[in-house]
Every structure is written in structure tokens, then in C-alpha cells.
Length: 362
Image 1 (cartoon, rainbow, N blue to C red):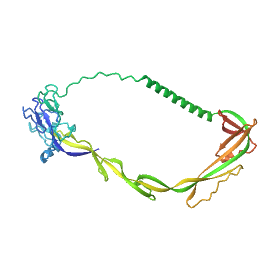
Image 2: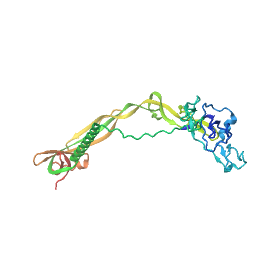
Image 3: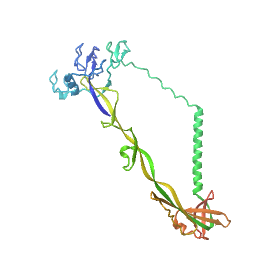
Image 4: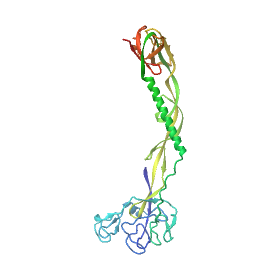
């Protein structure tokens, strides 16, 4: 997501020696004079207001303060030597920055009671301003409880359902096995043959569709359009709606907080109904015969028609010595031409007495 800066606020810190609240940029406690420790954490003030002073904004943008490596004094990010001892700040350590302090709010921070002395403190406080104790009261860890037992009926129902599904799967596999696997072979004679050839007839037919306007074919007739959500962009784009989350404050390490919000852009575009002519099957021409000279049908077409896909099917009618009849079909013209009337063939049958394959008898 894109981060949008709203401005800067002044943070506060609580002196660990006397518990007094101090402005974030204040380097020593205003009550007891002790210097701000290096590991002190900045917090949000009870009332948050965006800074308007240009000089203070520049200090907030400068970056994290530096604690002198020799005396520990706090110095602004732009300093090169320590204001306390004159030491080279190259040996110093920059304060941690970038941590989220909390949500930005213009109203007062909710007050909570100290778990030790009862004094009211902002809910963002780490230590009590009254007694200096931690505002985090230890909580007892609840003992883990065993999950409630599932009703026996539910388990039985699931078990029965799984058994039924397994039986159905086995039945389907078994049926497929019976259809495809030969179980016996018999000899039969071809008594007759037949063929059928089919050509589909297609016609230009108006079809209504809907898609993004930019994807509509150039020869289509556009109907009604409306705006719809299409995608999300991290950067501003035309016809987009900016959607931002709750503003929050990030510690800059200088006693100030940067107020930012995460934003993204919902992109909307025109989606339209359109009509386009496409070739669709509307009829078919079929030619049949019982000879060995199969032909394709020659249908008469109108100006808005054309020939489509072709298909062919050849059938052999066989009879065994016991006068039992069988049929075998194929789409291979070369095989069909070998099915001479009166010729002997060995046909392989599946468990359902259907013909799986046939080969010339030796």
C-alpha cells in the first residue's frame, strides 16, 4: 500500500527517576533534571495535534537523534559533535525509529487506572505518572481446557457418509472395468455394413456478451455500459477512488511522531454489453449408406451459412454360429473397407456382452 503523510505530532516521555511527563524533544526531565535515558520509549500525548511550526517540522523530518558514545547525551540528527562533551558523534548511536506508537486521534486519549495506586493515566502510558510502577498488570494464564467432545452421532454420520462414497467409487471403477476389459472371444460373420457421414451447418448468429469496454471486438455493436470495480492500484490513476486506513503515528526517534495512513486506489472502468455475430451450428446434413462407397453430403447453403465440423461412423453387423447378433462401430474408414460381407472375425466381448474389439479370424 502507498503511505500518505499527514503531518507530525509531538510525542512525550516519562522520566524513570521521578515519573514526570516530558515533551518528546525535551532532552532532560523538566522536574528532576535527569537526562533522558537512551532506551526511553516515546509515547503519544493525551491530546494529539499536528505541528504547524516549520522549524519544528524540519527537526522532526531530520531523523533520529544521536546519543553520544562518550557521555550518552542526546543530540539532534543534524549534529556532528556532542553538545555536552564535544565528542565526535560518529561514535554515537542513533535512536531506534520507525516503530508504530499507536493510532492517530484528535480527541483525548482514554484514561485508565494504575493497577497499583489507582491514579489515572493515558492508556498509552507504560509507567504510572503517580507511582512510577508499570501499567502492565500481570495476568493469570488460564489453564488449557480440553476441547468439547464431538457428539457421537456426528461421528457416526460422517463414517457412514465416507463408506457410501467409497462404495460408489468402487462401483464406478468396477463398471468401467467391465466395459473395457475383454472377458471372452467368439467367432462371428459380417452380415452387413452401414455408414453415416454428417456435416454441421453453421449460421452467423447475433450473440450478446459482456466485458470491459477496452476488450470489446471492433466489429461489435455496443449496448449499455456501467462502471464496475476492476482492480486495485498502489498509485493514483484516473477513475480511481482513494481508500485509506486509520491514520497512525510512527516514532521518528526525535521526540516527534510522523502521522501516516496506508492508502490504495480502487480502479473503476466501463463494462458493457455488446452484440457480435458468431458462427453457430444451426443444422446438419446427414448421408447414409450400406455399400462400400461412403460420400459426404452436399447441402445447399444460403449466403449467411457455411459448412462446419465433419463426423463419420461405420458399423459392422455380425452374427455367430449360434445366431447371436452383435454390432461393432468405428470412425476409421480404412478399417471399414476391410469389413467384407461374409468374412470371419474374432470378436472380444466384455462382461456385459458388448464388443470391445474385433480382428480377422485366421
